[in-house]
Length: 123
Image 1 (cartoon, rainbow, N blue to C red):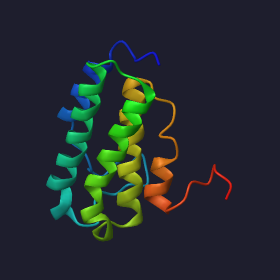
Image 2 (cartoon, rainbow, N blue to C red):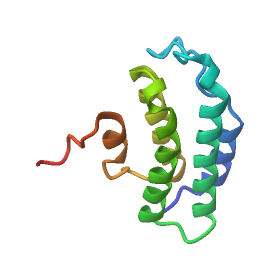
Image 3 (cartoon, rainbow, N blue to C red):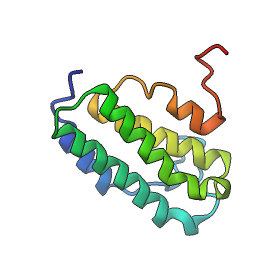
Image 4 (cartoon, rainbow, N blue to C red):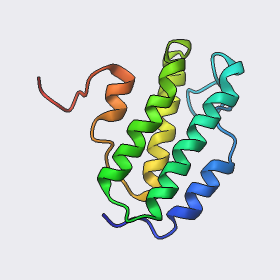
């Protein structure tokens, strides 16, 4: 896997930016429960830090997929407190992290977390 040459800078920028704010250009109007914002931001920043560690230590697709798995597990304690739009936004942030490093696929993990199944895989 060829990691984007500016992956470190993109990940650091991701950590610094405010997340879960309403975005008028999208369907996301902010968190359904604003009290969760601090904790959700923390989980995303930890996921970005995991990606940074991988970038610095012989990165490959499997390691980034492991980062996604661990990152999504962090959100499980709050899963039932999130509405569909909140969960979709979390997946969008993980896609952004993937774009930062040049990872093409989560290997179905985002779909499994969001929907409970991977629509790209046949039973």
